[in-house]
Image 1 (tube, helix red, strand yellow):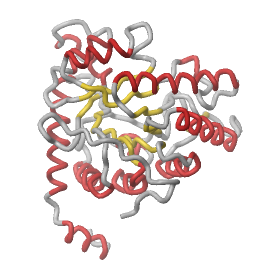
Image 2: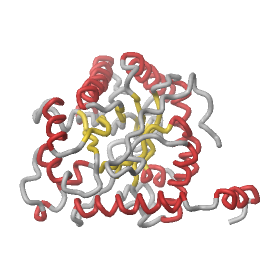
Image 3: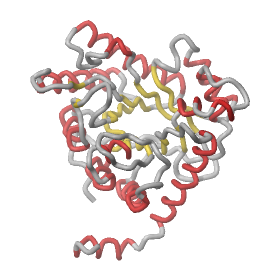
Image 4: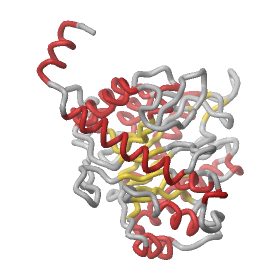
Length: 329
């Protein structure tokens, strides 16, 4: 299999963390989705503690991915968050960057060197939180690193800023697996500095650190006009995280629907390819229930992910390889 190319030494594979019932992967779901349908909740859904309490009711979920600093500043410490998880029988999956709106002109790409420094320090503070929480992955998605118009930025300069920033983070925290989550476009940034899987793989090569890899979001891949199975093959062993969802693939739309609800064939190939690249991580559902019960929606995602994973295991590998060799549909 294509392994994503040689980027320094072999990227660290993390530690396998199976689900409580022995399934190969833990399951997590978007914590902020627990704000949806507050009329169905049995208590307030205002604070991160409230959201963890509600998410703990979803059968099959094992871990929580926290947004940093969104789920910490003004709420609680990382130690208090860790204790809350333990009280509900959960663990932390990853810490995910969510830069505040004051970085609207860029985080690691901000034109002001002092703001860039602040963004880098905030990114490394997320790693401190991850250490306290007992997880080893920090996922970096910036809503603001990019541009809106031609001639608005110097593309080479912005790229180099990202490379240097990620190198600094990787070197300062060699025990943390730093993971870039790319996105092609967003209401905050029309063109991201890293807008595709191909660009993300190129960034991995340029950063050239074994603890730097990628998180691929199915919805973001669909938005980019990509086939998620091919994107996973491109990332190969540098795939540190995966975010499962689905969408109607309208231009620039991120629907955040239940995994495999629109593209079941692609969902099956996602699981097939995750098996082929030897993925080690956890399954995270980046979905937007909105009109639906978020607890029930999370449980449905768990069931569907398990179903597609088991279905991929049942495929005849020899037959699949024969079909691919002959370019037969």
